[in-house]
Length: 377
Ligand SMILES: *Cc1c(COP(=O)(O)O)cnc(C)c1O
Image 1 (tube, protein in one colour):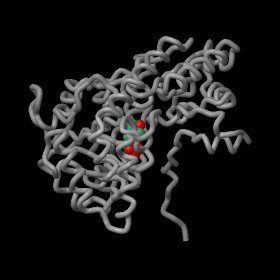
Image 2 (spheres, helix red, strand yellow; image 1 turned 90 degrees about the vertical axis):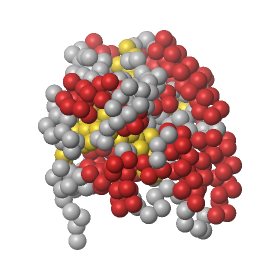
Image 3 (spheres, protein in one colour; image 1 turned 60 degrees about the horizontal axis):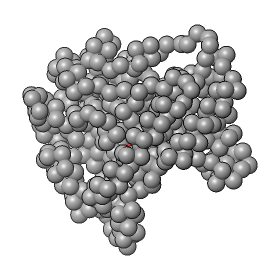
Image 4 (cartoon, helix red, strand yellow; image 1 turned 120 degrees about the vertical axis):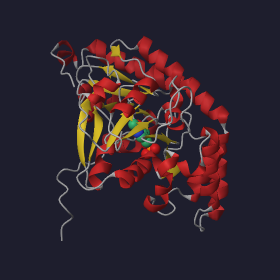
């Protein structure tokens, strides 16, 4: 017996964990800081950890009330109807629901390159195909309707990541509105706002609701997650906000009880804990500024909780930083072999990352690549 032909499918490459790296190098995990997966350096909201402990006693029941309560709390926060909130097992789970709800076999989606791998993986699981639009490094990964429309050819879903992973660039709402208007009626524009809390821009939920001077649209959806600003990457909780016109599709595509009792209770507590999100955003902005100002290499301006740095030879630098105890993301797998992505950390973590990177740059690690021809993506 064999699985179906998976030759077009690629495995997701996650940032590396401390345990994994320490074991491989035969070192003490305490020597490392991890700035590779855009996790929250302050940990989960303390209120959420209390909620998880309390919810443990209900772990034998299927989540029903908790699911309904969290859906209502999120709907309330964004001033949308409950049906418009599609809770899922992480933002990635919500990507699957959008694929399931829209893609027929052989339908195509359009994704940014460089970009987040899971959009394409999900489309392929659902027997769809993937086309790409280029965000140009030479143009600082600028995101406009035009950059997408140049590549657009009637795809069923167009993915916009704003703030964009791994560059940190954003697409203004006016441009997203134009993109949705100029693509076909049956094309859905999904705006992935996994890093929305860190950005100084309004949510594209304004577009589907027709707020702030925009006409309401039924072809825009928004993705959000509890993994980043809320510090709950380990519980797996995210959601899509979709137009009211087709929001009832959720009942027919969702995996029963996709968001667990523990996840829903943690999410409810975290949503209430404004203080934790504020502290997280503050810490992130300080770290972002410190890295932009302190790193002796080109750092792209970022609206996310990470920065992209032009280091020449990403693998050489990432390996050498890891050797010195700082785990960062080599962006070769994003198609950017010259760049690393560093997650914003606490003040100490940030200082250690900046110092370690600057030492290596001064020692000339990765230099031959830096001075040579830089490949554009
Ligand atoms: C982290 C991330 C997500 C969601 O991750 P989950 O942990 O599944 O919620 C979605 N999109 C982008 C671009 C991300 O970086």
